[in-house]
Amino acid sequence: MFRKVLIANRGEIAVRIARACRCMGVRSVAVYSKEDAKSLHVQLADQRICIGEGPARGNYLNIDMVIQAALNMGCDAVHPGYGFLSENSEFARKCEENGLTFIGPSADVIDRMGNKSAARKTMMEAGVPVVPGTKEPVTDPAAALEEAEKIGFPVMIKASSGGGGKGMRAAFDEEEFTRMFSIAQHESANAFGDDTMYIEKLILHPRHVEVQIIADNEGNVVALGERDCSVQRNNQKLIEESPSPVVSSKMRKKMCEAAILAARTAGYTNAGTIEFIVDRDRNFYFMEMNTRIQVEHGVTEMVTDTDLVIEQIRIAAGEPLSFKQEDIQPRGHAIECRINAEIPEMNFMPSPGKITNLLLPAGNGVRVDSALYTGYTVPSEYDSMIAKILVHAADRDAAIAKMRAALDETLITGINTNLDFQYRILDTETFRNGEADTGFVAKFMSGGN
Ligand code: ADP
Ligand code: ADP
Ligand code: MG
Image (cartoon, rainbow, N blue to C red; front, top):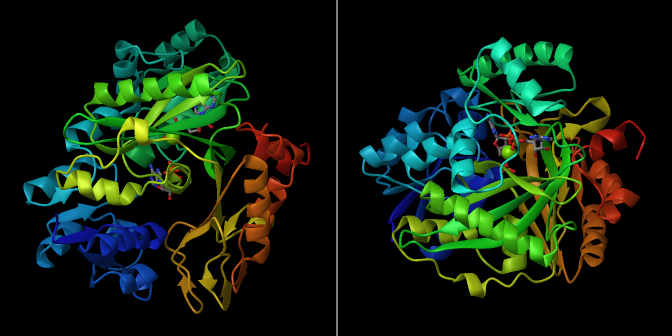
């Protein structure tokens, strides 16, 4: 096992990793920016090292700085969390070159799955159902239009290097396509330094359903069931749950088999997620693979009684998976609400600032992953997600009731949050009936739910 793990992240996921290390008797080191000096992850890790100030570019995203910190502190492994450098193959490669174990898949696998267009091709060839669309990337607008017409409108234009909803635009006809292709391509060139695109059939009123997988170095690949992440705003997840209200046991079996095939084809090790999009007829199609631990991994942990972060560390240290496929018998229903420091009434403008009073929910089957404490100042430099509230109950109705109670008792003063907004979504008939597709939040906000 590792002696000391560097946590290359901040916020709730850094806290999550520090806790896992503590449970395992592994020492941990936090990196932090000046703005984060008083953050919880810095206090919970065994040791800490400042790596700069200001926006993430100069610290959490600075590969050489993070690696130097790990070496200086005598670490033998690095956990990247999610976001930041977690899907950066150059970082993974440099870790290995410097004798640090990257807690995640190999750099080659990150490369193979990180290019979304190339990943589609790999999956098509392996026989995994993929959203109908281009097999090769496109850059030329005229050639792209030809492809779009072959697929048939409406289509989704996507960036090969895309992520976080960037470089993605829908188009319903030729005129719109030409306009949107140019916008999406520019956005991608700016955000990712890559203007190669691909085109997919736009799935109308889809559900986002993803399968958690985990694989060790001995060829064991286990699927831990699905998460439904259809409640999204601007293609960003707001509420996640497991199991999905639209997945039958027969469909689950097929999705898990497809996910395992995808992971095996990619030569995957460690924790990862296969994202599928599900159409109204319950056909599911591969969308992309996320080669890291995800924000919403907790809902899977609750229904499968596993600890995915501990498992990630064990696998990276060369140990076999601690469970087999037949040990995974999901139980009950889990829901997660992402809590953001923002003002929903002002177009979700971030709301950083000092937390003057805090009461987080607790009780039977309630879990809170956060980095908050009374007196903590949420900095303006980073992501606005400040907490995740999760519940687990015997069935979906009971889980919704428990989440309402949990949100109700939560008190966060000094800053604005989306607590109320989440409560109102949970209270809609559409959500309660398990009928929310990815367009639901937009419809809810325009008053038409
Ligand atoms: P990212 O890399 O930004 O996560 P994804 O390819 O996973 O991008 O897509 C993000 C979200 O966009 C999905 O969860 C879904 O809501 C929507 N989306 C993506 N592709 C399609 C499509 N072909 N049709 C309809 N919606 C889509
Ligand atoms: P998950 O897929 O695990 O639910 P998200 O897609 O919400 O997670 O992304 C995880 C975190 O990483 C979020 O904080 C998000 O803002 C950030 N993120 C994701 N993709 C990018 C990207 N391409 N560039 C910058 N930040 C990103
Ligand atoms: Mg995605």
